[in-house]
Length: 352
Ligand code: ADP
Ligand code: MG
Image (cartoon, rainbow, N blue to C red; front, side, top):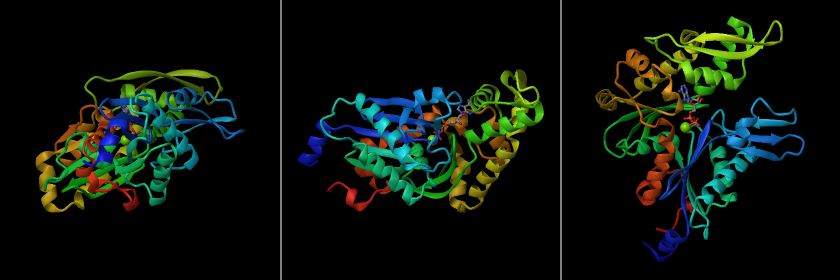
């Protein structure tokens, strides 16, 4: 360790961020996860100013006056709005620094980004992080970070498969020898399921639901495989005929029907990745099973459905929402060891 390294270690923090499409999590080395908030920004369209970020912005969804909009800047896994993303990132870095004990020097950052992000978007995230006060920015692909977070043997000559079902995107990745061997990123994930539920309830019950209500029904009774006990939820929306509020009881089977077409696309994508994976690696995966992470891993019946469809053992990760950010923590423990799996520019590498 050089003198500079020691100096930085004493006076600067290492921060890991999972910049998810639905949730942003922040990790401070030595302290663990310090922030879990929705990736949402409330923007005043008249002034262009950010009114709120994270939890505060989330409370405003569906309740804002006309000139304030709640934006999910990463919802399709892409940085749809550079400035808003930058404001959001800067807010989360500030949150991290509140927990930091070493504010003397600017922090070092590892950020997990969706795997299908373009170079331009990646640069935008990097610039945003630098503008928000980071001294050094390292970018890691989320599937790789999740794999490290749940301690898969990513550097071994053995194939692992990981599925991350998030809000805006689902990542399906096969990892071996420190690299992503095969992967697929699809925009079918939690948000799409919510939209499916809204469309279904509109068509079947003639009721318009808000996004939050759809999300509530999904997390409460949503399943992808027939449940032993039927489940029900009472939800409220606007009757499309009378225009007045109305309550309706929906069941787990309604939700299964609503999301079935999206689930079919998801299953096909998993099969496609498996079909294009080299035989030796497939054999490892059949032997070791597939791990599922992300908030979407929590939907009831996922294990049963996937096992029936692909005939490979499925393991739902413990604490699936935090896998990616825990992975950034693993990287921060020993940056040199993980340098090869980070997406960095040469000019940003610290001296070796
Ligand atoms: P991202 O990494 O894209 O930010 P997350 O991993 O935080 O996404 O997952 C968020 C998604 O998980 C949301 O769409 C949310 O509705 C979904 N989710 C969380 N819990 C459940 C649950 N119990 N059942 C179904 N979906 C869930
Ligand atoms: Mg995620």
